[in-house]
Length: 342
Image (tube, rainbow, N blue to C red; front, side, top):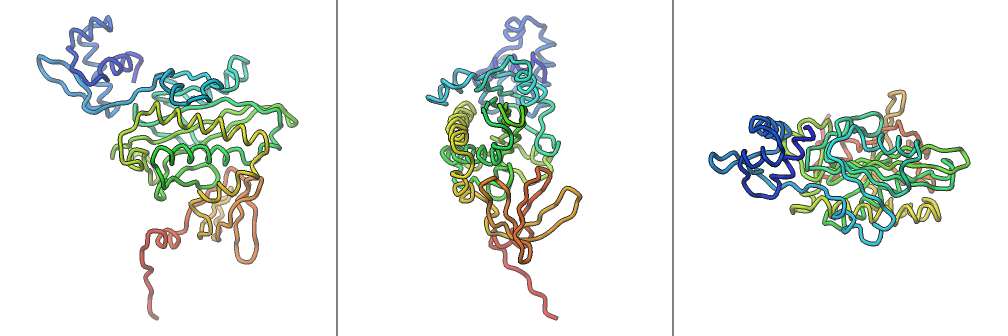
Protein backbone atom coordinates (compact mmCIF):
# COMPACT_ATOMS: atom_id res chain seq x y z
CA UNK A 1 0.00 0.00 0.00
CA UNK A 2 1.15 3.52 -0.88
CA UNK A 3 -0.30 6.99 -0.18
CA UNK A 4 -1.77 6.93 -3.70
CA UNK A 5 -3.42 3.57 -3.03
CA UNK A 6 -5.14 5.02 0.02
CA UNK A 7 -6.26 8.10 -1.89
CA UNK A 8 -7.81 5.80 -4.47
CA UNK A 9 -9.39 3.64 -1.77
CA UNK A 10 -11.09 6.64 -0.21
CA UNK A 11 -12.46 7.69 -3.61
CA UNK A 12 -14.00 4.31 -4.44
CA UNK A 13 -15.15 3.41 -0.92
CA UNK A 14 -18.54 5.11 -1.49
CA UNK A 15 -20.00 2.01 -3.16
CA UNK A 16 -20.32 3.58 -6.64
CA UNK A 17 -18.46 2.86 -9.87
CA UNK A 18 -15.79 5.41 -10.87
CA UNK A 19 -14.30 5.55 -14.33
CA UNK A 20 -10.55 5.26 -14.74
CA UNK A 21 -10.47 8.60 -16.57
CA UNK A 22 -12.35 10.40 -13.77
CA UNK A 23 -10.09 8.86 -11.12
CA UNK A 24 -6.98 9.83 -13.08
CA UNK A 25 -8.17 13.45 -13.29
CA UNK A 26 -9.01 13.62 -9.58
CA UNK A 27 -5.71 12.06 -8.56
CA UNK A 28 -3.70 13.98 -11.18
CA UNK A 29 -2.05 10.79 -12.48
CA UNK A 30 -2.23 8.66 -15.62
CA UNK A 31 -4.80 5.93 -16.13
CA UNK A 32 -1.93 3.44 -16.01
CA UNK A 33 -1.01 4.70 -12.56
CA UNK A 34 -4.64 4.27 -11.49
CA UNK A 35 -4.50 0.68 -12.75
CA UNK A 36 -1.36 0.01 -10.69
CA UNK A 37 -3.01 1.49 -7.61
CA UNK A 38 -6.01 -0.79 -8.15
CA UNK A 39 -3.66 -3.77 -8.29
CA UNK A 40 -2.11 -2.64 -5.01
CA UNK A 41 -5.58 -2.69 -3.42
CA UNK A 42 -6.13 -6.20 -4.74
CA UNK A 43 -2.76 -7.29 -3.36
CA UNK A 44 -3.97 -6.03 0.02
CA UNK A 45 -6.96 -8.41 -0.35
CA UNK A 46 -9.42 -5.62 -1.12
CA UNK A 47 -11.57 -6.91 -3.95
CA UNK A 48 -12.24 -4.44 -6.78
CA UNK A 49 -14.89 -4.88 -9.47
CA UNK A 50 -13.61 -3.79 -12.90
CA UNK A 51 -16.37 -3.28 -15.46
CA UNK A 52 -15.64 -1.99 -18.95
CA UNK A 53 -17.48 1.29 -19.54
CA UNK A 54 -18.24 1.79 -15.86
CA UNK A 55 -14.88 1.71 -14.09
CA UNK A 56 -13.93 0.49 -10.63
CA UNK A 57 -15.89 -0.31 -7.49
CA UNK A 58 -15.00 -2.04 -4.23
CA UNK A 59 -16.37 -5.58 -4.01
CA UNK A 60 -17.35 -5.15 -0.36
CA UNK A 61 -17.93 -2.26 1.99
CA UNK A 62 -14.90 -0.90 3.81
CA UNK A 63 -15.28 1.31 6.86
CA UNK A 64 -12.45 3.84 6.78
CA UNK A 65 -11.49 5.82 9.85
CA UNK A 66 -12.40 9.47 10.23
CA UNK A 67 -11.15 11.46 13.23
CA UNK A 68 -14.32 13.59 13.74
CA UNK A 69 -16.43 10.45 13.41
CA UNK A 70 -14.39 8.62 16.04
CA UNK A 71 -14.65 11.60 18.39
CA UNK A 72 -18.41 11.67 17.92
CA UNK A 73 -18.75 8.04 19.00
CA UNK A 74 -16.43 8.62 21.98
CA UNK A 75 -19.02 10.92 23.54
CA UNK A 76 -17.97 13.23 26.41
CA UNK A 77 -14.60 11.43 26.62
CA UNK A 78 -13.68 13.10 23.31
CA UNK A 79 -13.09 16.34 25.24
CA UNK A 80 -10.07 14.61 26.82
CA UNK A 81 -8.77 13.22 23.54
CA UNK A 82 -7.06 14.35 20.36
CA UNK A 83 -7.66 11.77 17.63
CA UNK A 84 -5.31 11.57 14.65
CA UNK A 85 -5.92 9.15 11.78
CA UNK A 86 -3.07 8.19 9.45
CA UNK A 87 -3.09 5.92 6.43
CA UNK A 88 0.44 4.49 6.68
CA UNK A 89 2.80 4.19 9.63
CA UNK A 90 5.51 1.93 10.96
CA UNK A 91 4.12 1.47 14.47
CA UNK A 92 1.57 3.66 16.25
CA UNK A 93 3.22 2.88 19.59
CA UNK A 94 6.70 3.77 18.38
CA UNK A 95 5.53 7.02 16.76
CA UNK A 96 3.59 8.14 19.81
CA UNK A 97 6.42 7.24 22.19
CA UNK A 98 8.82 9.25 20.03
CA UNK A 99 6.52 12.26 20.10
CA UNK A 100 6.02 11.95 23.86
CA UNK A 101 9.79 11.87 24.39
CA UNK A 102 10.14 14.99 22.27
CA UNK A 103 7.40 16.82 24.16
CA UNK A 104 5.23 17.20 21.06
CA UNK A 105 2.28 15.05 22.15
CA UNK A 106 0.00 15.68 25.10
CA UNK A 107 -1.94 13.23 27.26
CA UNK A 108 -5.00 11.95 25.47
CA UNK A 109 -3.42 11.99 22.01
CA UNK A 110 -4.49 9.04 19.87
CA UNK A 111 -2.89 7.78 16.67
CA UNK A 112 -5.01 5.31 14.69
CA UNK A 113 -3.57 3.78 11.53
CA UNK A 114 -5.29 2.21 8.56
CA UNK A 115 -2.15 0.14 8.02
CA UNK A 116 1.07 -0.22 9.98
CA UNK A 117 3.91 -2.12 8.35
CA UNK A 118 5.86 -2.74 11.58
CA UNK A 119 3.07 -3.37 14.03
CA UNK A 120 4.24 -5.29 17.06
CA UNK A 121 2.83 -6.96 20.10
CA UNK A 122 4.10 -8.43 23.31
CA UNK A 123 7.45 -10.32 23.34
CA UNK A 124 8.39 -8.79 19.96
CA UNK A 125 5.68 -10.61 18.01
CA UNK A 126 4.36 -9.08 14.79
CA UNK A 127 0.75 -7.95 14.55
CA UNK A 128 -0.98 -8.79 11.24
CA UNK A 129 -3.90 -6.55 10.27
CA UNK A 130 -5.78 -6.11 7.01
CA UNK A 131 -6.51 -2.70 5.50
CA UNK A 132 -9.95 -1.57 6.61
CA UNK A 133 -10.48 -4.81 8.53
CA UNK A 134 -8.76 -4.12 11.84
CA UNK A 135 -8.03 -1.42 14.35
CA UNK A 136 -4.47 -0.49 15.29
CA UNK A 137 -4.20 2.52 17.56
CA UNK A 138 -2.22 3.94 20.47
CA UNK A 139 -3.23 6.28 23.29
CA UNK A 140 -0.85 8.50 25.25
CA UNK A 141 -1.59 8.86 28.96
CA UNK A 142 0.26 10.36 31.91
CA UNK A 143 0.22 9.72 35.67
CA UNK A 144 2.00 11.55 38.48
CA UNK A 145 2.96 8.18 40.01
CA UNK A 146 6.07 6.18 39.20
CA UNK A 147 6.15 2.74 37.58
CA UNK A 148 5.95 0.93 40.93
CA UNK A 149 2.48 2.37 41.56
CA UNK A 150 1.15 1.34 38.16
CA UNK A 151 1.16 -2.45 38.58
CA UNK A 152 -1.84 -4.02 36.89
CA UNK A 153 -2.33 -1.21 34.36
CA UNK A 154 -2.35 -3.51 31.31
CA UNK A 155 -5.01 -5.63 33.01
CA UNK A 156 -7.10 -2.52 33.67
CA UNK A 157 -6.82 -1.66 29.97
CA UNK A 158 -8.14 -5.15 29.19
CA UNK A 159 -11.23 -4.45 31.28
CA UNK A 160 -11.93 -1.31 29.27
CA UNK A 161 -11.62 -3.21 25.99
CA UNK A 162 -13.93 -6.03 27.11
CA UNK A 163 -16.52 -3.55 28.36
CA UNK A 164 -16.53 -1.86 24.96
CA UNK A 165 -16.65 -5.10 22.96
CA UNK A 166 -19.49 -6.52 25.04
CA UNK A 167 -21.39 -3.25 24.63
CA UNK A 168 -20.99 -3.65 20.85
CA UNK A 169 -22.41 -7.19 20.98
CA UNK A 170 -19.45 -9.52 21.63
CA UNK A 171 -21.03 -10.95 24.77
CA UNK A 172 -18.44 -13.74 25.08
CA UNK A 173 -15.34 -11.49 24.99
CA UNK A 174 -12.92 -12.60 27.71
CA UNK A 175 -9.45 -11.80 29.02
CA UNK A 176 -6.29 -13.89 29.09
CA UNK A 177 -3.48 -12.89 31.45
CA UNK A 178 -1.68 -10.61 31.00
CA UNK A 179 -2.88 -8.72 27.93
CA UNK A 180 -4.94 -10.66 25.38
CA UNK A 181 -8.65 -10.44 24.61
CA UNK A 182 -10.28 -13.70 23.50
CA UNK A 183 -13.55 -14.78 21.94
CA UNK A 184 -14.42 -18.46 22.25
CA UNK A 185 -10.79 -19.21 23.04
CA UNK A 186 -9.38 -17.41 19.99
CA UNK A 187 -7.42 -14.17 20.06
CA UNK A 188 -9.53 -11.15 19.26
CA UNK A 189 -7.29 -8.30 20.43
CA UNK A 190 -3.90 -7.63 21.98
CA UNK A 191 -2.59 -4.93 24.30
CA UNK A 192 0.92 -3.49 24.49
CA UNK A 193 1.68 -0.91 27.21
CA UNK A 194 5.02 0.90 27.15
CA UNK A 195 6.16 3.20 29.93
CA UNK A 196 8.82 5.82 30.44
CA UNK A 197 9.54 8.10 33.36
CA UNK A 198 11.33 8.39 36.71
CA UNK A 199 11.03 5.71 39.40
CA UNK A 200 9.02 8.07 41.63
CA UNK A 201 7.10 9.66 38.79
CA UNK A 202 5.74 11.17 36.74
CA UNK A 203 5.09 8.41 34.19
CA UNK A 204 4.25 8.56 30.49
CA UNK A 205 2.45 5.58 29.02
CA UNK A 206 1.66 4.59 25.47
CA UNK A 207 -1.16 2.07 25.32
CA UNK A 208 -1.31 0.19 22.03
CA UNK A 209 -4.33 -1.88 20.95
CA UNK A 210 -4.67 -4.21 17.98
CA UNK A 211 -8.18 -5.55 17.25
CA UNK A 212 -9.39 -7.89 14.51
CA UNK A 213 -12.62 -6.46 13.12
CA UNK A 214 -13.02 -8.62 10.00
CA UNK A 215 -10.73 -11.51 9.04
CA UNK A 216 -10.45 -13.24 5.70
CA UNK A 217 -9.40 -16.87 5.47
CA UNK A 218 -6.07 -15.76 3.97
CA UNK A 219 -5.44 -13.55 7.00
CA UNK A 220 -6.28 -16.37 9.40
CA UNK A 221 -3.75 -18.57 7.63
CA UNK A 222 -0.98 -16.01 8.25
CA UNK A 223 -1.66 -15.70 11.97
CA UNK A 224 0.31 -18.17 14.07
CA UNK A 225 -2.51 -18.85 16.56
CA UNK A 226 -6.31 -19.31 16.50
CA UNK A 227 -7.82 -15.87 15.79
CA UNK A 228 -11.29 -14.36 16.04
CA UNK A 229 -12.80 -11.18 14.61
CA UNK A 230 -15.31 -8.76 16.09
CA UNK A 231 -17.88 -8.91 13.28
CA UNK A 232 -18.16 -12.68 13.71
CA UNK A 233 -18.50 -12.22 17.47
CA UNK A 234 -21.20 -9.57 17.04
CA UNK A 235 -22.93 -11.20 14.07
CA UNK A 236 -23.12 -7.97 12.08
CA UNK A 237 -21.13 -5.49 10.00
CA UNK A 238 -19.54 -2.78 12.11
CA UNK A 239 -18.48 0.83 11.62
CA UNK A 240 -14.85 0.91 12.74
CA UNK A 241 -15.31 4.53 13.84
CA UNK A 242 -18.02 3.39 16.28
CA UNK A 243 -15.80 0.57 17.54
CA UNK A 244 -12.83 2.86 18.13
CA UNK A 245 -15.02 5.51 19.74
CA UNK A 246 -16.50 2.99 22.18
CA UNK A 247 -13.07 1.65 23.09
CA UNK A 248 -11.68 5.14 23.74
CA UNK A 249 -14.70 6.08 25.85
CA UNK A 250 -14.22 3.07 28.12
CA UNK A 251 -10.45 3.53 28.21
CA UNK A 252 -10.78 7.07 29.57
CA UNK A 253 -13.20 5.85 32.26
CA UNK A 254 -10.98 2.98 33.37
CA UNK A 255 -7.73 4.97 33.23
CA UNK A 256 -9.28 7.64 35.43
CA UNK A 257 -10.45 4.99 37.92
CA UNK A 258 -7.03 3.34 37.91
CA UNK A 259 -5.28 6.65 38.52
CA UNK A 260 -7.50 7.34 41.52
CA UNK A 261 -7.38 3.94 43.25
CA UNK A 262 -5.04 1.56 41.41
CA UNK A 263 -5.96 -1.90 40.20
CA UNK A 264 -7.38 -3.42 43.40
CA UNK A 265 -10.99 -2.15 42.91
CA UNK A 266 -10.97 -3.57 39.36
CA UNK A 267 -9.60 -7.02 40.27
CA UNK A 268 -12.92 -8.82 40.75
CA UNK A 269 -14.25 -7.55 37.43
CA UNK A 270 -11.09 -8.76 35.67
CA UNK A 271 -11.56 -12.22 37.20
CA UNK A 272 -15.16 -12.33 35.94
CA UNK A 273 -13.82 -11.89 32.42
CA UNK A 274 -10.86 -14.28 32.94
CA UNK A 275 -11.00 -17.05 30.32
CA UNK A 276 -8.85 -19.39 32.44
CA UNK A 277 -10.29 -18.69 35.89
CA UNK A 278 -10.20 -21.95 37.87
CA UNK A 279 -9.02 -23.92 34.84
CA UNK A 280 -5.94 -25.98 34.20
CA UNK A 281 -3.24 -24.00 32.40
CA UNK A 282 0.29 -24.52 31.14
CA UNK A 283 2.79 -21.79 31.96
CA UNK A 284 5.94 -21.30 29.89
CA UNK A 285 8.64 -19.48 31.86
CA UNK A 286 11.31 -17.16 30.39
CA UNK A 287 13.90 -19.95 30.29
CA UNK A 288 11.57 -22.19 28.30
CA UNK A 289 10.55 -24.44 31.21
CA UNK A 290 6.86 -25.34 31.46
CA UNK A 291 4.62 -26.12 34.40
CA UNK A 292 0.98 -27.21 34.66
CA UNK A 293 -1.40 -26.01 37.31
CA UNK A 294 -4.64 -24.17 37.95
CA UNK A 295 -5.27 -20.44 37.46
CA UNK A 296 -6.50 -19.17 40.83
CA UNK A 297 -7.11 -15.57 39.81
CA UNK A 298 -4.96 -12.48 40.17
CA UNK A 299 -3.59 -10.35 42.98
CA UNK A 300 -4.30 -6.69 43.65
CA UNK A 301 -1.01 -5.95 41.86
CA UNK A 302 -2.06 -7.85 38.72
CA UNK A 303 0.10 -10.93 39.41
CA UNK A 304 -1.32 -14.23 38.16
CA UNK A 305 -2.04 -16.61 41.05
CA UNK A 306 -1.07 -20.09 39.88
CA UNK A 307 -1.54 -23.28 41.94
CA UNK A 308 1.05 -25.91 41.16
CA UNK A 309 0.68 -28.90 43.45
CA UNK A 310 0.02 -27.56 46.93
CA UNK A 311 1.80 -24.24 46.37
CA UNK A 312 0.35 -20.96 45.14
CA UNK A 313 2.81 -19.04 42.98
CA UNK A 314 2.64 -15.39 41.94
CA UNK A 315 3.69 -14.80 38.35
CA UNK A 316 4.70 -11.30 37.26
CA UNK A 317 7.03 -11.52 34.27
CA UNK A 318 5.89 -10.11 30.94
CA UNK A 319 7.94 -12.90 29.34
CA UNK A 320 5.65 -15.63 30.70
CA UNK A 321 3.26 -17.34 28.29
CA UNK A 322 -0.01 -18.85 29.55
CA UNK A 323 -2.40 -21.17 27.74
CA UNK A 324 -5.11 -23.65 28.63
CA UNK A 325 -4.01 -27.27 28.77
CA UNK A 326 -5.48 -29.56 26.08
CA UNK A 327 -7.58 -31.27 28.75
CA UNK A 328 -9.03 -27.96 29.96
CA UNK A 329 -9.74 -26.90 26.38
CA UNK A 330 -11.58 -30.16 25.71
CA UNK A 331 -13.70 -29.74 28.82
CA UNK A 332 -14.61 -26.16 27.90
CA UNK A 333 -15.69 -27.31 24.44
CA UNK A 334 -17.72 -30.14 25.84
CA UNK A 335 -15.46 -32.75 24.21
CA UNK A 336 -15.65 -36.12 25.96
CA UNK A 337 -12.35 -37.41 27.30
CA UNK A 338 -11.06 -40.68 25.95
CA UNK A 339 -10.27 -43.40 28.47
CA UNK A 340 -7.80 -46.15 27.76
CA UNK A 341 -8.30 -49.52 29.42
CA UNK A 342 -5.22 -51.36 30.59
